Image 1 (tube, each protein chain N blue to C red):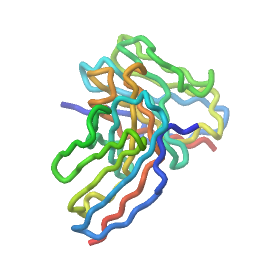
Image 2: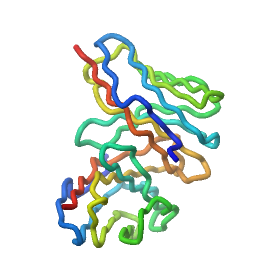
Image 3: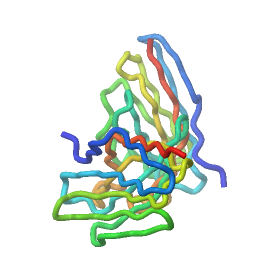
Image 4: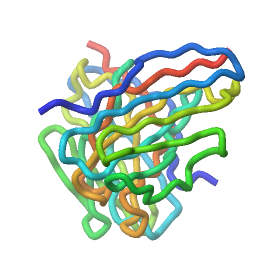
Length: 113
Length: 115
């Protein structure tokens, strides 16, 4: 049973427009949600996180929104740049699980010039 | 600051052979994690060390997998004997904090192919 799901395997966006990546989860015990970015042949790189007590966190062009009632989070990238093309993973952690992360399947973002 | 280092970067072995993957975490990071990504699917947790102790090994697939972290520094993950379904990318990550909110630093991974 997959606790974190990213239902869109891929997304294509024009440069300068907004990219919206979505993630759903089932476990209400998750206390942090994170987004990682992964380029080919590299490890995932931490991008941004949000605590379960907040509904929004912003860092430059990246904003994560959390809707706890819907068990849904999204990552907004504005404006999108070609260098943002990568696989984006949503992940969640439960403070009682020692930092173990549960990842989604990833969404491949392609930003076209 | 050096990042998380993993080697080899690639390994191709025959079914039934043994392979040992190594991870050098960031110096001073007590928490070390192993994850695996199989066939483009989600990245799955394997186990978590705090210093030299196994904190959580609930994700280890079976007893063909053995992880060690002698002295609380580098870690090894041995697969013996390897099976075809063990193919995938094995990631190591380290963290100062044992909670997920701060994020980890991942290594570049070891791509294991069992033929």
